[in-house]
Each structure stands twice: as structure tokens, then as C-alpha cells.
Amino acid sequence: MRLPAGWRSGGQSPFRATARRFGKQGSLLLAASLVLVAAGCSRRATLRPLPADATLLAFGDSLTYGTGAATGEAYPAVLSNQLGLEVVNAGVPGERIADGLRRLPSVLDRVQPRLVILCHGGNDLIARADRAAIEEPLRDMLRLLRERDIDVFLVAPPRPGLRLRAPPLYRDVAREFGVPIDEKTLSRVLGSRALKSDTVHPNAEGYRQIAEAIADGIRSAQR
Image 1: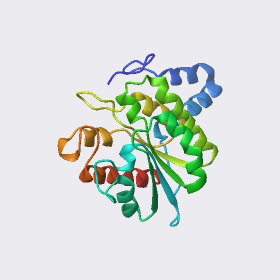
Image 2 (image 1 turned 90 degrees about the vertical axis):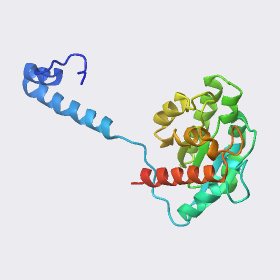
Image 3 (image 1 turned 180 degrees about the vertical axis):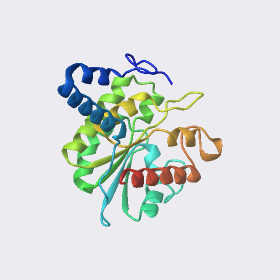
């Protein structure tokens, strides 16, 4: 294992050296530093428990709407059955993330959700938009949801290519706002021909697996 800068194998850590140099004050500094390090290592994004009458909002584009599957097979409908909660499908096929940002406030006013499953930006990635064109509206969405005291579960779409992978911006923004994120499921589903109805949309089984992963993610984040 590679040791951090300033550490030597079999020797003292910088924290302990500081403690010996400064005596009691150094010991206090050592203890405080270790507490901060432990807190940083154990910190993870969480969600508040959902009451039995909670309404969830699935907000996004065609991947949320359910393009490629029959009515009732989109992931929000399947997720509703898995969680036993109402999940409102607010997906708009073809929508870019900046347009989604403009649409979001009125949808929140109408639905009054306890939790939003946010999956947006896929059409921008297909159009090869730059990072800022996706990241800034995404930040604004999360900022709006935080101001309204609404929890968020973020689902990251993949960048098109030979190897599907969510752009790092989704993970970076999720960490910035402290929200749980699934950045692997869509890449896995859309990377499998057996789980797709066309080149960019899942089929019924693909949507079922997306719903299952989101349900597991939500349950895990509530623990």
C-alpha cells in the first residue's frame, strides 16, 4: 500500500510527531484530526425515511417516460410497485436539460413530491454538449430541490461511445450536494442488446432492472 506523503513505513505519522513536539496541545490536535479523518471516510449521502403516503417524482426525458416499452412498463411504474408508493412519471422524450430546468418548478408545484428521482442530460450527451451546458442546469435543479427541502436520488445517463460510462460531472455534482447517485445502472442496461428496444432506449426488461436498482439504492440510502 502506498503511504500518504509525509509518512514512513515503520515510522511516525505526521500527526504523532506533531503531538510529541507540542505536548498536550499536540495530543488534542492529533485526536481532533483523527476524528475529522474518520468522519470524512464514513460520510455517505443519505435519504430521509419515506412515509407510507409519500409521493415520488421521476423527472427526466425519454428514459423516464419509458420510450421503447408499453404503458405500465416504464421504470417509474415498476418502481411504484416495488416500493408500494406513488411515483409520478414526469418524463418528456427529447427534452434537453436546460428545458427540464425551466419545467421543473411547475411540476414540483403540482406534484409536491417527498423525493425526486432525477435522470436528465442524456439528450445533451447524445448532442455532445459541453460539460458546463449539462452541469450548470443540473446544479440549478439540485439547488431548487434543496431550497424546497425535497430529497433527491440522482441517476446518471451514460455518454455515448464504445464503452458506456456516466460522465464524472454527475458524480462530482452529487458529492457537492450530498445526494445519493446511481451512475452504473443505465450504462449497464444500455450496454446490453438484450435489454434495449433500440440504440438508446431500454426494453421492458431493461426498465425493470433500472427500477429494481433505483429501489435498492433508495432503500440503502435510507439506512
